[in-house]
Each structure stands twice: as structure tokens, then as C-alpha cells.
Amino acid sequence: MKNKIILFSKTLVLMMLTSCNSQNEDSIDLSKEILGKHIDSIVSPNIKINRNSMNHYGLDNGSLETASKELMNFNGVNLYGFFNEDDNYRKNSVKFGFAKKDSIIAMYELLTYQTEKSNQLIKALDDFLGKPNFTSYQKVEDRKEGNYDGKLWEDKINNRSFLLHVSMQKYGKKCWLHVVDNNNPYFYETAIGLPWFSKWENYLKFKEFNEKPGDFTYQDYIKDQTEKGDEYISILTE
Image (cartoon, rainbow, N blue to C red; front, side, top):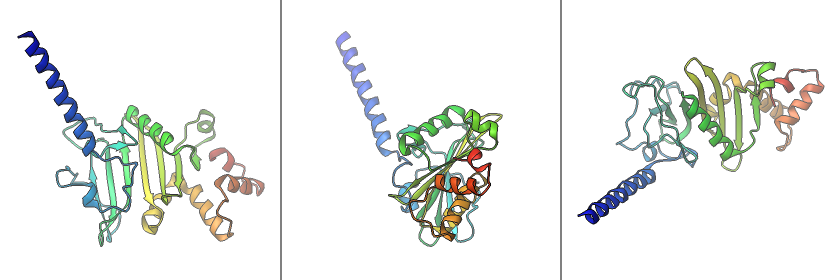
């Protein structure tokens, strides 16, 4: 009888592990190739979407937002989390943006509202992408303390950009990540037009207007602007 109980327990544990592995196989990692795919291939009919979410992408574009556990993964890290599971208030979520004409994903926004999950996302980005191409700070004290409010990584191989905004709120650390297809002018300009990346946007315009070579980096731009008298650019950005 004792042996039967032990065998049953082992079988139950094996079934639970198999079930967990199956769920992991069904989940989608947002660090992988999401951009350029049809929205229906990522957000399947069984995924619960937030139907109260506003579309801020214009008349020609659509959006879908979800807090589904199957989609809240980035570079192997599960970012599923919430303050109140029964409503969408401060629930970690992802919003996909796409053109209505073809439903191909051109950008997604990932939001985390809990300090623990936000720190996990930051580490996942650092592990996945390495040193950022651009970092911004609100004030001199923030730079001294290492409290950045914006980080940007360029993935030139896949022609996409990762733009991270970090802020401290009463409820904890909030992260707002945009991942955008650089080939899509509307979504790309929407992302780099955010206030935390204005210096990066200025750098791109300067680079284009002055016909700088492809290897002209933001750090080269800092040096150029500092020599012209901008004493803050090297303090508030790097």
C-alpha cells in the first residue's frame, strides 16, 4: 500500500511538471521575433484582451492590449503581475501596434508597475542587449546616483530599437518599454518622439543633415556638441 502511494505521488509530480513544461512551450517570449508578424499569430483567440484599452496609434493603425500570462515573458523572465487581479488597474501588460491594412506588428509597449518585476525587466534587457546606445538623466543629481530615466538600444541586425523609460511612482518602480520596427516611419517616430529620447532624436537629425557616416555614434555627437558649447549634454546623457 505504501509503495502504491509513493508511486502515485511520483506520477502526480511528473504530471504537474509535464503540465508546466507544456505551458512554457505555449508561451511567447517578447524578446524574440515579434515585430513583422501578423497579430493573429501572436494574440490567439484564447488570449484575454483588454477591450477598454484606447488606440492612440491613429486612424490607419490598430492596437491590442493584454495582460495574459502567456505573453508576459521577456528573455526567459516572466513579468506577469498585478495589484488587483480582478481589474486592469496597474496590471503589467503588453500593447501591440499594427497597420490595419495588413495587421503586421510594427511596435509593442510593455508596462510593469511593481518594483520587483521592473527590476527583472531591466536586468533582462541588460542581459539580452548589453550596453545601451543612449542613456538619459533628468538632472545632475540623478546622473551622480545612476538614476536614469531613459535607455535606448539599437539592434541593427534586426533593424529594431528598444526604448526604456523608468520612473519612480508612489506604488513603486514603473517601466515602460517600446520595441519598434525602425523601417516603419509612423511607429518609429512615435517612439523616439517621447520626451526622454529627445536628445537621441536631435542626434539622428544632426547625423542626417550633416551627412555623417554610419559609425558616427551618439558619443561622437556629445563630443561635437560639447565643443560647440553645450555643457549639459555630457552630463544629462551618455
